[in-house]
Image (cartoon, rainbow, N blue to C red; front, top):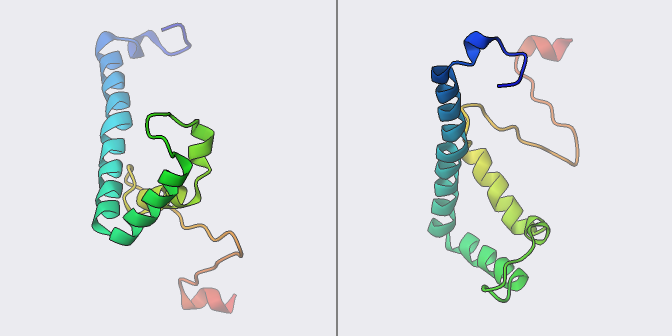
Length: 115
């Protein structure tokens, strides 16, 4: 409320609408993506087995919460999450595919090959 935004944009209705957008953007989209990732893990026994093995090794005592930096460093868990986000993005845009080893080019038109 203490900003350079015009007073006409600080009405109760406008603030309520902004709050709804933030709430939906932070809950529903995340829930949909997590549901899709969970489906893929549970429907593919080899993914489930490998992920469970990595998590069991990293967290031997399920009653003791690990630090987040240790969880973020788990390679298979990270790969599962990133692939799930790529396949089921929360937003309507497509996720880019990253090729860290080399640059990838896709020729779209024949004319571009000649230039």
